[in-house]
Length: 108
View: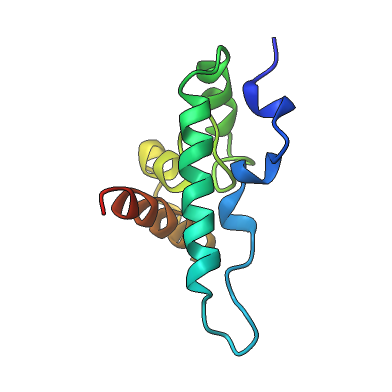
């Protein structure tokens, strides 16, 4: 059985934090950031109806996947927090910040 993401026309929706947000000059593009937030929420909504969600989340909790993408309906930051890992680093901090941003943006 395959996940719903495997046949989606925009698979990049499941890897929002890996798409650059910066435009020339080093300032973030608000429109691009907003689009990434919208895409992340759409991807999570699709995951919520996926028949392989539990297996996908299990795969997303693996060390090589935990910092990247949406797996089983959870953002990288959510999975890192769930794993309660003591490892720190810029990539993990950015992933947590992105996950918090998506949730905050959704409540606006």
